[in-house]
Structures are given as C-alpha cells and as structure tokens.
Length: 273
Image 1 (tube, rainbow, N blue to C red):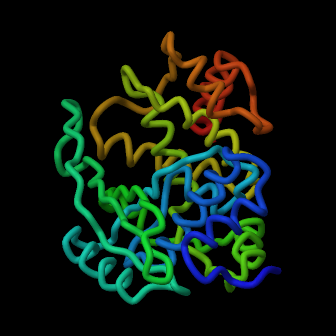
Image 2: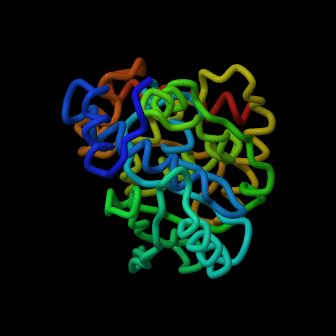
C-alpha cells in the first residue's frame, strides 16, 4: 500500500501507477470518483451500471460514466442534503452540485425524466474531476429496500492508494434493475443496448427469484404504461457496434443477435416462473 496522495495531481499520478493504459486509468478514476460521491448520497439508492460495478466488481462489469440514483425523498431536499455532505467531504474529497438541463424525451412524462447534475469534485482543496449524477424518483418502491455492497476489487483500489476502505453503498435490488432494464430494452426505438450486457451479468447471481422478478416487471410495466408485459426485444440496425463496445473484454455473449435471443428467452422464463 502506498502513502495517500497529498494533492489532486499526485492522486492522478498514483492511479496511473496502478493502471496499465490510458483506458484503464480513466476506468479506475471514474469508478473511484463515483464511489466517493456515493459515500455521501442522502436517502436513496444507486442503480444502473455503477450499481452493478459496486456489486460485482470493476473488472467484471462494463465501463460507465454516470452515477445513476433513485431518491427516496423530494428532489430539492435530496440535492440540498447532498450539497451539504459534499461540502463536509470524505477523506479529503469535497464537491459541489451544479444543475444541468434535463432531457425532454417526447414519450416520457416530465416527472419520470432523470434529473441531471454535475458534481464538481475537489481533492485536498484542488479541482479533481466531474461526476455526472442522474437522479430519478422512487417509482414502485425501488429505493425503499436498499441492498448494501462494496466489491472487493474496488475496496482494494482505495486501500492500494492509501485510503481507507469505502463503506458499503445502498444499491437498488436486482429485481428492480432487471425490470427497468427489460423495460428500457423493449421500448420501441430503444438505444439501451448496454442493458443486454448488464442483464447477462445480473443473471449470474443464483439468488435471484424469478417469481419476484415477474411480479416486479408486471408492476413496473403497468406503472409506466408505455408498453405491455411480457415484452419483446428487437434489435435495431445500429445495435451491433454499440453492443460490441459495451461487451468488450467481458465474459458475455459476443454476438448481438444471440444476446437478443437470450434476452427474449429470459423474458419467457420470468413470465413462466
């Protein structure tokens, strides 16, 4: 274990020393920054790709930049509390919240759109990096029963750099993650190809109860009222290249058409559970 870096420049140099390429450096730095912010999140859960990374490990999951969350309280109260916690900081890291303009997709009611924020992070008083935070609301109780995890390889990343091990982070239960990813994948015109990768990683967890997943899918699809359950997933012409990038280096199905077929079989298994 090395001595803890004494400024942001030396922190980046230390991360470079434990990584072997620029790509790996960016991956480690982004993961570390997301985990630091997650240490200070108010009432709610982390979801999406970062949640899977925290649960299953940095090396076993796809690269993602965003820190997606679901709040269990009013947005203004959530952000106000987060800003206060960021000002207090964690192990030399501090930050401030900057509001960004949300997307305006035609098919999604405004109250369901994720609210985007930039977290301007500093280390020992000097600017370090920006974390892209997305805040969603608690749809069908998906933020009410967090599952706390911290993967061993991410914990070791901090220890190697001279920091204490970060505490377990509240994550969205996997049954809700599965339901949300199947809903996103099956939307007409969906571009959420990375969810094909995430679903394969999630389904390796032998503790998943497909009957519970079916109930969650039924509730979510009914709640969102966009399209029906059971759903059907159909690949678009541009999915192959996007899927190839998302699945690169991971032990998942490498052909996008085979992955889509696998996902449709999964839907049938869930529906029959």
